[in-house]
Length: 153
Image (tube, rainbow, N blue to C red; front, side, top):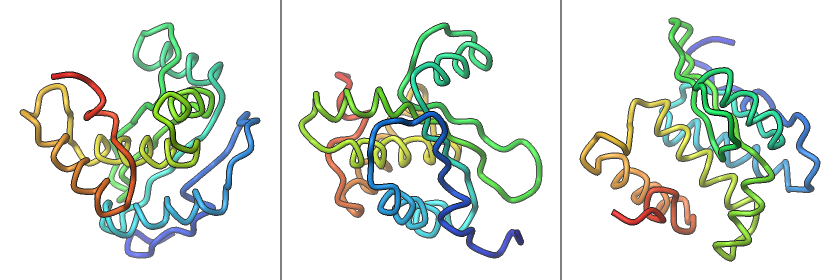
């Protein structure tokens, strides 16, 4: 794949161990839109997987022995890719139920959140910059309340 070419949706989103039924075609279209509009054509790979795999990834790479909803792994090489994101479909389904929207919408929120991290934003220390960016993109992409806006200040 050339750096200048936009990747195919099947290259952006990978499902492994994700047993819940979701509209994969719709999620791939959304990943393509994120690639084009948010990431400026830069590729990324998003793994949608189960809680067990997310716990393993969180433990292996961050030293945290627990399940989390989304992990971001920025690219350190020079291939033009933003990096990789991993999303727990189980956590996405539970959070979707808690916030009264669909699992696909929650996965889209998690993908957006992860991509903003890949682009260098960090809500823990950027004085609201990521929160504002996420809110702008959520409005533009017609997504429900995002992860950062759910957490009290």
